[in-house]
Image 1 (cartoon, rainbow, N blue to C red):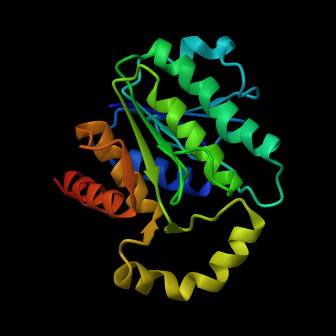
Image 2 (tube, rainbow, N blue to C red):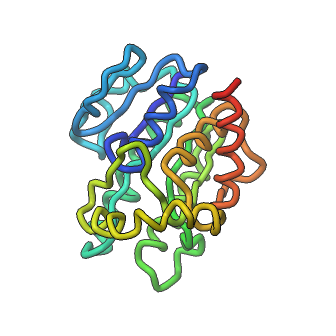
Image 3 (cartoon, rainbow, N blue to C red):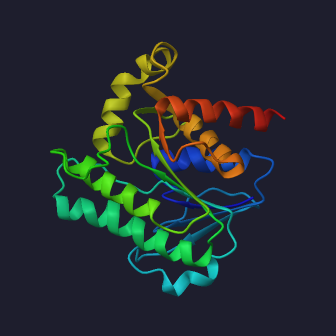
Amino acid sequence: MRILIFGATGMVGQGVLRECLRAPDVQYVQTVGRAPTGQLDPRLYDLVHRDFTDFRSIEGSLRGFDACFFCLGISSVGMSEADYTRITFDFTMAAAETLARLNPRMTFVFVSGASTDSTEQGRTMWARVKGRTENALRRLPFKAVYLMRPGVIQPLHGIRSKTRIYRAIYAMLTPLLTPMRVLLPNLVLSTQDIGLAMLTLAREGAAQPVLETRDIRELSRHGTEAVAA
């Protein structure tokens, strides 16, 4: 498979990139971001691009991919709805509309969040914006669109969040997250779980487009089996 990753320097994106580079059936991985990932692998190419509202100048480098894993995102803490919409909705749709035109047989996987508001009418700002983004993505003519809604995410393998407040929270929760994943499997996932689940979606798809924590965990088990095989 040829995989395209947006947001590969973020916490989730780092985990997804790691699993892609460990997968025997992934031939090529290209990241798109404002900075390179800093990782070295013969199958990896970092495409640095600054303007996430316009991808016309790099369209030639965005063709021929089997799947896109869109992990680009930001915390809504302290942000206005307009600024959060620009990053969460505008950036996502600019990329997705370009990719749907260039790669109509592509599987597009978007990292959303638990409690996303599909009605777009709720009181919680981030949930409304995520819901609007999900709904717009589902209207695009991809082979398939999957919307992942993880809850609590445990970073593994030395991965750290880029958001300061999240790093502080994870530092406090680290001793608890592993047992929580065992005791509350429908609440807590790891960065590895999400990466493996995305690869399963690229390989096999899923019965439903919206994937909650329970669904993501089940897909990750299939991904683990594929790596072992």
